Each structure stands twice: as C-alpha cells, then as structure tokens.
Length: 117
Image (tube, rainbow, N blue to C red; front, side, top):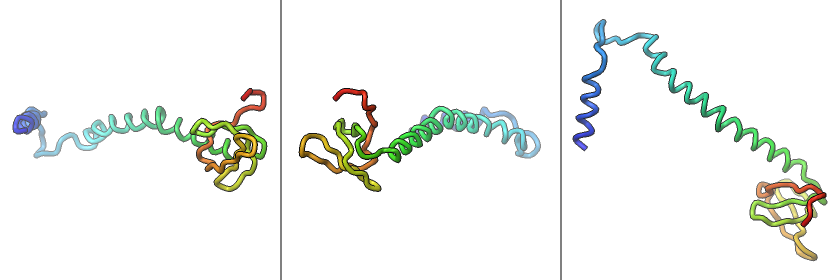
C-alpha cells in the first residue's frame, strides 16, 4: 500500500511546472480538464441512456394498447389470452377453465393473431 502512495506522490512531483504563483492554466485549463468527462457523458447518453428510454416508452405504449382477446407472452414464458384488463393487472386464460392474474409490467410481448400456439 505504501508503494501506491509513493507512485501517486511521484506523479504529482513530475507534473508540469506551474507559473504565476500556483494558478495553473486558468479557464482554458479547467475546460480542457472537463472536456473528456463531458465527452464520456455524451457517449454514454447516446449509446446507453437514450436507447433504454426509447425501449421503455415502446414497452409502455404496448402495455397501454393491450385489450381483451389479445394473445400475449409473459416475462416468465407463459402464453395466454387476455380475459380482463385492469389498471395494473390482467387476467389471462392459459388453458380451459384456468385463469391467472398477472401484473401488466410482466407482459413481455403481444403476439400477432397469425402466430400459432
């Protein structure tokens, strides 16, 4: 652990010579040191945050459009037909005389009527 502190101390000792009584670079130095952080945030936004928000909006729109008679698949892989739609839950018919109440958030996809069981 002591070796790590020695390396850090050496790195500070080898830093650029600062002129002007300890004021290093001014505004230009501050901007150039913040620029990489800003660029990293922009890259993360366009590669991670924005696509995830788009996917969440599409999923919410799909959940809002579910109606009685739709064929769906739950996140657990259960295939069913919507019997009743509530605010936060659905009643699915998964077999003859077998109905299950499922939270809307656990609906994975809505199947098209042309797909086979």
